Length: 133
Image (cartoon, rainbow, N blue to C red; front, side, top):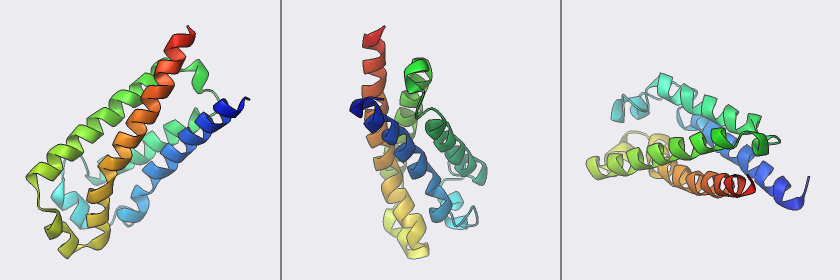
């Protein structure tokens, strides 16, 4: 494995671990404030699916070169969550969430930043993979 491949591999692991941090913010799916402020996307099922996406990122950390179209799916998934987050911020009062629960406030403050960051990472990886073939 080259140094670049090792760095990219660690990026997939980092993306997965960041998704799994939802377990902390949601207090292992027991934080009602997160689900109250976004009952569709951030329902307990939605939060569980975020963890599953994280496991998917980690699962390909050493084989991402062989699943370029799956990496492309990761790009689309992160784009969707990033856009949803911006829409959420434009239509909600974040200070209200902080008053109710600090972890929920931190979650809604940061989850989209994470999604945009890893959207960029997955996009760069996908473009590199597409140029190889």
